[in-house]
Amino acid sequence: MSVKRLDDCLSVREGTLYVEECAALDLLREFGSPLFVFSEDQLRRNVRRFQTAFQAGWPDGPVVVMPAAKANWIAAIQRILADAGCGCDVYSSGELTMALEAGCPPQWISVNGVPKDEDHIRRSIQVGARLTIDSLEEVDVIERAAAELGRTAYVRLRLKPVLANFVDHSDFVAEGLAPTDIAAIAYKGGLTFEQVMAVAPRLLHSPHVELVGFHQHHGRHHRSTRYWEAQMAAYAAEIGRVCQALGGYRPQEIDIGGGFAVPRDPFNAATNYGEPLQLAALHSVSKVMRLFGSRPRYAVMARLVDTVAGHPNRHPAPTIEDYAAAVTATLRRELPKHGVDPRGVTLQLEPGRSMHGNTGIHLTTVKAIKRTTTPIRWTVIVVDTTEFWFTGGRYEHHLHHYLFANKCDAPMTGKADIVGRSCYGDRLLPAVPVPDVAVGDVLALLDTGSYQEVSMSNFNAMPRPASVLVTGDRAHLIRRRETEEDVFRRDVIPAHLARRPIPRTPTDGQAVEPVAVARRQAEVAA
Ligand SMILES: *Cc1c(COP(=O)(O)O)cnc(C)c1O
Image 1 (tube, protein in one colour):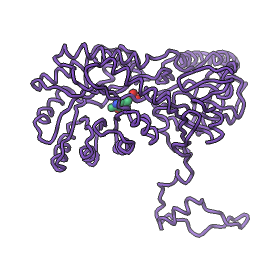
Image 2 (cartoon, rainbow, N blue to C red):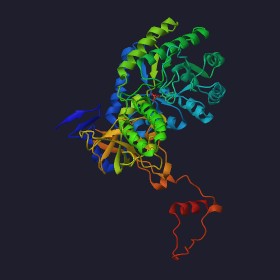
Image 3 (cartoon, helix red, strand yellow):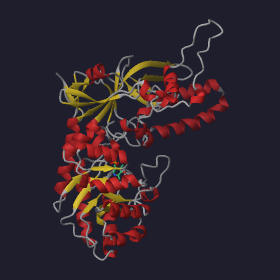
């Protein structure tokens, strides 16, 4: 049997796609289409690689991997992470609940974010989680809540080191060429030196609060290791500056945040590569050709449109090991330069996309193929998923690697837009190479393990698809498919809008059945 490994958890056997030991097509048959599929083995491997690589570079103290819950907060996924010895970066109260229920040790939970509600702060203190301070406003609330609860609040300060040595353009700003240092300043996270110094002395002297260290997170502006070296150099300098200003304070923990890329790196691929430039050329030629009338114009445009091709990112990102080496070497070199001894300091990291991205794929079935031949050639392949179930990715201009799960080895013979089922244009993959595709074929979008499932919406009143976890040759449902009833669950019809007695249509005299959901809701409201 021919077996080709694509990634740790993916392989192609006799031309069909496997996740661990499960055939993708079997998964669809059992659980329905479309489907999010996650690999337990891939997630555990990623955790081990982060733990091993960062610990190897940081002999000075413990390393705690605290994956960002927002990237994938499905309960079963969080259970695996807690079981594998991870902490957790949480933003919201819901994510805190999930991390605690998964069994994550509270002292390894970083409660990030601004604003934090008072209840959220109180609970964080009560359970002993780390509060990562990210606004001056929350300091009063923390002190008061800790005093009232008779507990110590363990806090860290989220710094905002200026990345003056890194001016490459930020991938976050897809529309322009914003330099990363400026884009990072514009992002809301973190406190400036002046803001830190406005509260740090008070935190150090508060009987209810213990300042245990520092945090930073700029996110994935750039995927290079150079970006990480620049971040860590700036962070070390900022930590040194704050410690000195506090009269020789020593942090117990230093959290470097997240923002490492996943190897196939779909982030911003939709804008970083060929298509936009080609489209710009097309646009200019199109304008000029208007002067010649529509027949010549379409003749020229058809030629040009044939050349337009989109494709996912072709350059692999650095590995987990590359990032670990860059981060730890820079920190260990730079911290002592700024008077901070790294010995005994716990190093924490919060990978999101790089922890989860390649743990998941999305399977979707081809439902229709529409071919246009005049005045230009264009093929549209309609699948049963939608960009509204990839909201996180659309927001970040993702372009995912893909293959047809039942035709992995088929040659690419044409070009098509692969579009979703919503009433939007829903271009999931614009103008990409495709094999000879038929209705019923199964498209696999790769690296959908982070930010996608957890950001789905119900646009077009569409029930959201299910998620399964593959473990070897077994697959378990970990989030069930929504029903239409789920979609309307939160709707309430006020009593004065309740439907009146069933109207009769003038034509056939038959009773018109009111929509079942509306009727049920009216009963609830009444
Ligand atoms: C989003 C986030 C992360 C994870 O970012 P990735 O780019 O997915 O690695 C880590 N820490 C904080 C505070 C975050 O907001």
